[in-house]
Image (cartoon, rainbow, N blue to C red; front, side, top):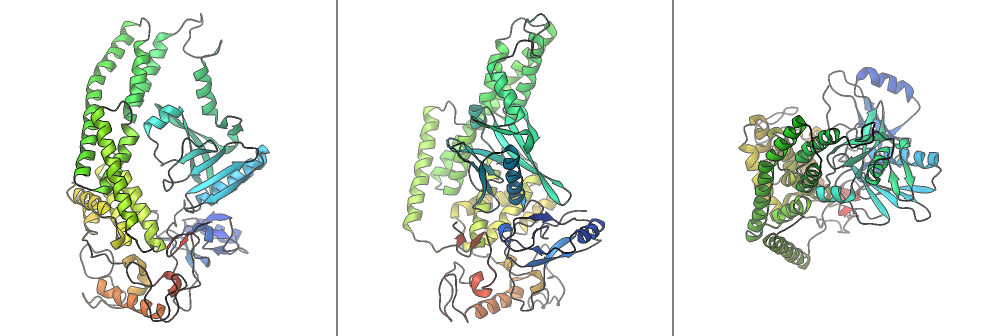
Amino acid sequence: MPGDKRRIQTAVLGSADSEEPLILPLEAIELDAFRREHTEDTFWCGLLLGGCGTQLTTKLYTDRVCHFAHLPDPTGLHVCERRARDVSSADHLYVKSAAIAWLLDQDHPGAVHLREPLGSVVDIAWEHGVRGLRLHLDGAVAPVWDDDLIEPVLGAKVPVDVDTLVRRRYVHRVRLDSAGTSRRVRIGTQAPARDTEWFSLDECHMSPDGFRTPAVEEILAARRGPRSGGTGYRSAAGTPNTAARAKALLRRLADGRKLGSVVVVTGIVEEIRSLGPLDPLIRSQVDQALQDLDQWFAAQAKARRDLFARIDQAVRDQESGRVHQLLLLANATASHERTASEEAIVAAAAEHLADAAARDRAVPRPALPGDVWFAQQRVEKLLANLEGRRTMMTAEMCGLVDRLVREAAIVGDALDPGDQALIERWVARAEASNNQAEARAASRYRLVRGSWTPKEKVSRRLWIARPCPRCGAGAGQNCHATGLLGPHDERIQPILDERRARGLRETCPACGQPPGEACTTTNGGPHTERIAPKNKTAGGTADGPREK
């Protein structure tokens, strides 16, 4: 049964500020057992989930997924701006619970902290100056690799540049797997040209030199050299088994090519060329692999030239957003052995971004509402993902573009002009793709500057209850427009006007505007706190992320 990401699948037990998460079963037969198990419990849209803090109930369906829902609000004013609602939306709470249990089991004196933005970062700190861990569950906060006090642990989908991976020899990763109505924490070790190996948290330990997994111990042992009597690349007589080592290097070479790392492949090639005499069959395989590399290195060199040419052109076109994204890509994939011309292009790009930042600081900007601020961060992440991918399937690209323009529609007029240009370029690319179904999904959100409509701020249950004055759709009917996912603007505008009028009757608790005066938001609409003062989110206010 396909999941519905709009439905609430996680909650907390007992109270709004609880740290005890749980997942609702998706199937009706499982929900019956779940209800019997939690007869005496209450479920809440938890503040630590970014929720509104109100009570939830369970909804049972046989034709779609079961989910949590807010209890009916008799006033009709309730607005929940919780963005993350799927099974992974409580992962930070599961990580905190598992980390606390692990500290107790290991007899480590320490503490676990949830950091902003909520749901993205979890810190594990030890006493006595031992290096702590910072778990990046998503890419909202960039990891710091040279901090002596914090060691990064990346989420399974958080990217790491090849140079960092090679320089550090390995990086830690974290993922969570569903187990019934809970989530199980897994710790991984990623190293160059080898698959990520995953372990349970109780298989890991802290050492004076940092966090260790079984894979890390193996990597460090290999770096120190094979031990006598081991099972490395040695025969029973103790002489190097070059054939076995050659086969292993060829496998690593293939992995390095998939990784797209010139640094890794070059190092493996040096090891291959240092091998002694080989069996004729193995020698032919090695020679063929080295011969094939000529074309691969040529392709990598061309991609590198194209990348720096794109950076240079973006600087000439004064497209700050594109310069920023391409410079990130260059620092991740092409930071080694730069030529003088490449260094000059990077310096010009950095100077352009510095000038653009100085101009931005010189122009005062109004504070962004919380939902706009978070949408802006998601736009940046999606653009970085699209710009940083050398190749991807058409359907995947169109899906990312569809998500991108949804978030951009929330940002509206606050969207950076450079990001606007990048988004329009990706939308055009999606529309021109051969995947017609996905292309139509992107074209439904065709970007036209100045025509943003805050459809996602109006619940469907509100606009569907009234007829559409534009297309004549009656109450309970969708608008009669091919390819339009939501209502016409004319159908939701009265609701927005009513909200604004209702909000103007009171002093705004967010910006302090007196009755009758509009809020200081970018679009002139009221702050969420003014419409429903009792409903506040844990992740931030209408003016941006909450400071701790």
